[in-house]
Amino acid sequence: MRTSEQVNIYNWEYDIATKEMRPCYRCMRDLGLPAVVTNYPEPAFDMGIFPQDYYEMYHDMLRRVDEGTPELEADIPLTAGRVPFRIKYTTEFDDEGKPVKAFGSATLISETELGHIKVDNQIISTLAEGYAGIYLADFVRDEVKIIKNDGFLGLQDDAGCGDLMSAVAGRLKEAASDEVDVIRDVQRVRNELFTDGEIREFVFKDEDDDKWIRLDLHLMEKGSLGVDRLLVTVSVIEDLRAQKMDADRLIAAQKDELEDRQKLLLHAIDEANRANKAKTEFFSNMSHDIRTPMNAITGFSRLAVDEIDDREHVEDYLDKIVTAGDAESGQKQEITASDMTDRSYSDYTILVVDDTPINLKLAERILETYGFSVRTADNGVNAIEMVRDARPGEIDVILMDVMMPVMDGIEATRRIRKMEDPALDGIPIIAMTANAFESDIEAALNAGMNAHIAKPFKKENLIATIDRYLV
Image (cartoon, rainbow, N blue to C red; front, side, top):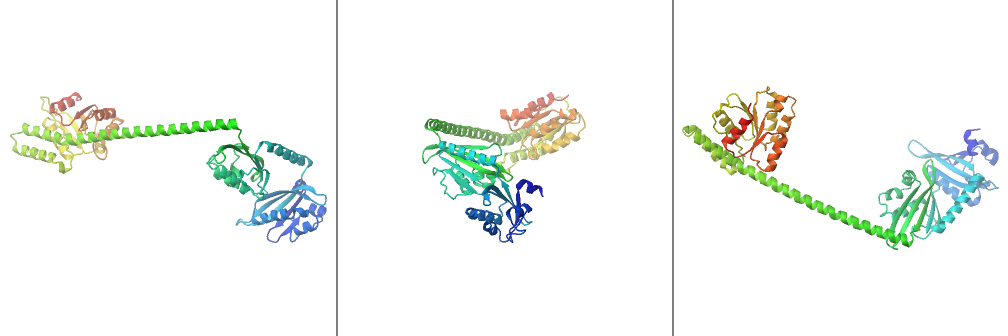
């Protein structure tokens, strides 16, 4: 005798395609069934194994097996003595997912379990006094037992589990919007709804009837496929508590309104800050664009005065002054200039970083006049490479423009200050730029520059500033 026969008492195999039933030895011995029962389950009813008043219910159960329901269960009395048995079917599928056969079992319901069922019914009947609606859903049989119906869910007497859960979801669409999709889907209810407890409670306002409603979902029984039985209870909350909940709801709404206003205020402050920043950037850029040609004009004018007897140089300087003053040329002329001093700078090398060729040419001309060796770079990336490739002490000072393509002077300074060689990361860097607002000076110093010179500048101030950082 097989183990399953010892546990379940009766077992059989049902072939969906042929409608043949193959019973176990005990079925044949106790119930008089042949080894193969054709046109099942008709012979079982003809022999009185199943009562005639369960004919429709049992045929519906097999119809669902034929359609591919994975698992079904029902309590049916067997034989003339109407002994209560629990009939269960488990469906088997082929590789394509088509149902091919089902394994049936009939387990005797003990007196103890019958007593539990009776007690459960008594408890539910007692609970009915405190609830407006009570509905017991059996997912295995797809049946809903309406114990008490106040019409709140609008269920018909023949409603199935899908109808019940759809009705519940419809009522909860505003109170529990995040879970409505789960509640509407029977399979998700069975597998997902009760992962963190056996009761799900929802309290909400029924605006149509102006009442506060409490709707609870109780897990009653769980099987291998998830929740097998579920109890739905609906109650109307008493007046005093309902009044308090109305007050709480009003307070919550006012709190939400206050938070929305705070968000609007913060947004307005944000907009004001952005507008202020845009204004500052506008004036900074405008200052840069104005100072740049002014610096070129001033610088080349002074060179022309200094070299008044050199006609070729003077004509070159005047030509550059005209170019710098031409607003339609589209070029930003950022100039460096230095004043005459008696000190010799022939042993010092200065790296000038600027993206405008005329600025580099002017700086090179002025600094070489006073003995400096000059190197040039047209953006921050090239400047970093030249510093990295230099020997310690080879570059004495860096004059760094700020607004440049590829990499600006602020970022280039930060990266130089992070170099591993202390003889290189400590080279004095002087910002020489038309960005002359307090915020511009602060940004340059915060990046690691040693000083800031605004264009246009006096030559003596430039030389004095460079001189401070020469060893």
